[in-house]
Image (tube, rainbow over all chains, first blue to last red; front, top):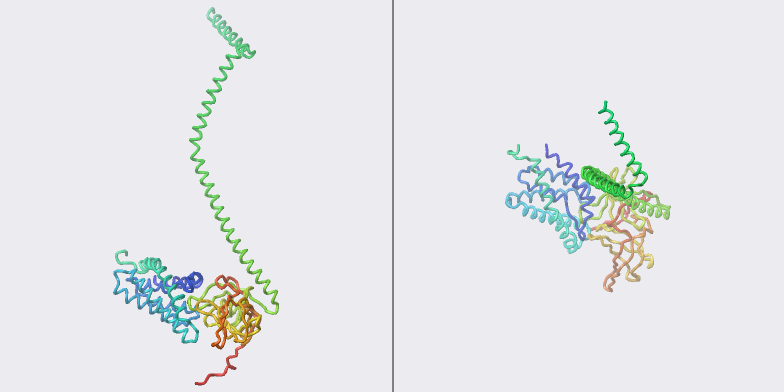
Length: 166
Length: 281
């Protein structure tokens, strides 16, 4: 039941992303709060609802962005998949896993966006995209990853309380 | 009886002596002695009074500190409230200035009808340059309507819901605007980019383009009304082996500080796509 917190939390995240985070830019890139939230959530050991969160995040973000809904959804599902893959392998170093997922997730989503826009006829310079959009976005995502991970860890403890605590 | 008489006599003598001394003292006969006496009396009185006041201050001081602290907290609260009011008023002044500029702009272009809208968000993807405004189909906003500020053209409405709309900025990489160079009196195309820079393309090699030339919408293609300001030419790039010249453009609108925009509601874009011949393989 506590998983329903996803609705207000992801809704708020989409609003924050659109109203604030997208205005705090470095060169032409900015952070992706929703991606980081999903990565941090999927990396929590007890969490079993990460796929649902990704689906909801894809729907909500797809409603706001001009990017096709499917591209956004695939990107977020891939982030969850990466997080769960790494969570089993690098479970002893959660922050390292968080950084890895943020890195790979950002690159994947940017690659998807670049591929879609190029195929749809939008002229994009790969050098500009890499140097002025992707790398700055990556740096901002990394900076945001630590506080978001701490927040989501506390949230996961609240949503999935341990048996001893109960 | 004899004892009673002697006691009355003693009392009478004492009264007379004391009364006499008082009369002499009041008459000034003991002025030096009485002065010394009163001086020492005043000194003692002063000492006692000073000590009493010290003790009184000591006893009542904590109460004063508490009341002072309370008063200080009240004043600090008032200061913070006033500071909040100042910030709010500054914000209102800023909004009023923007609105006043937009009203001036709309009065200067009476042929168009405008609807003001606040910018409430941007596209979450850094690859796209779109803004979200707080007016939608309930306010008669339709897809394709141009969006301007008092500085110039911002973009056009791309998607509409009941109470909001998404606007494609002219800096978006997929945006192309047909423009006219005012001084050179020639047409060109203004292209956006992923970095938000604007480039002027398709300028004929026969035309002389100078930095500082004003760029206006040409109205060709029916996507935008003519004569809306877009920006100025900054640098020109011209090579003999290329078909067209290119130029970088300084936009008239500061896209990083968009707060309130105007939607031109009486402009209906013309869809010329059926007239464009299909390219056969």
